[in-house]
Length: 358
Image (cartoon, rainbow, N blue to C red; front, side):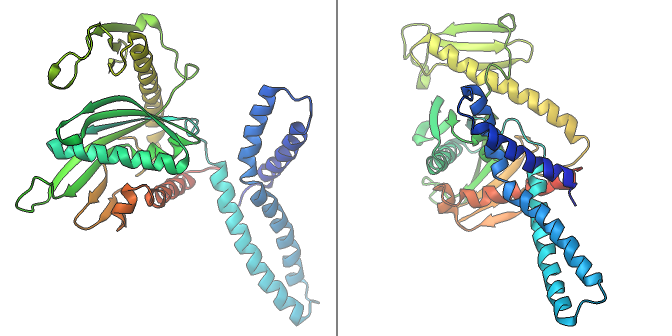
């Protein structure tokens, strides 16, 4: 049961926003902020109105059933109506509870994704490249834009490390559960005995922080410049264009050398640093909240093995929700990614609902 006043407030606010947005002289910034709120409420307004209507109908139907003068045929119709109304009430309550869950302020943000090869040598680097290609395909399917910030190639066409910015609608909310250790089991091309090798790569998904989210004091930074180097250590630039930024209070270090311009490298490094500091701040806050509850999903622990990609069996298994899809090819192509991602989101919401106090 959800308090009626909470639902009435949703409907009242929705109607108020409709009136505000209809004003011809509305200022641009007011239009943007009100449109955003209206769009959020629009996702739940049908269930809010239906819930209020269902409560009214339940009351009148129960009165009919309690009335001893009600004839048999009408009584049976009311019994069926009561059953249908209770099902509608249950669906509305479920939807409204999800809507009333505490919002993650970072969900609407863009994301910075970092993929690093782990154990497994060249095979791990190839797997890191496979993961990045998968996220690129997911981005295309969602209409997101991907920009590589930093890339360290390895032998054989893989990546030792790749950092990229992904820009689009609700990117972080869709990718935040990808953080963790991803494990692959397959027979490498160089394996002559047909033995299955196990390798791993780590994925970190950070909400892209803006200056308003994190203020960085220049006095807290140490900035070093050095000459860019390529594979094998050879110089790729004749000027000191590479930048290393150290945030002294946290000890976080970010290096950037992809651009020929020192200024551009510094800007990219600060962008990554800001997101890392924002993520650190969120992790500390989440740690405090987690003391009161235990969650299997969304812990943010990047040492946690979250998923296994088994090529011989053609399966992908998410260990947090014990779900296996025998659609590995489709998953790596981005086509089956949503199926697993949605299942993780639902499980996370169910865990939150258990702790929700309305």
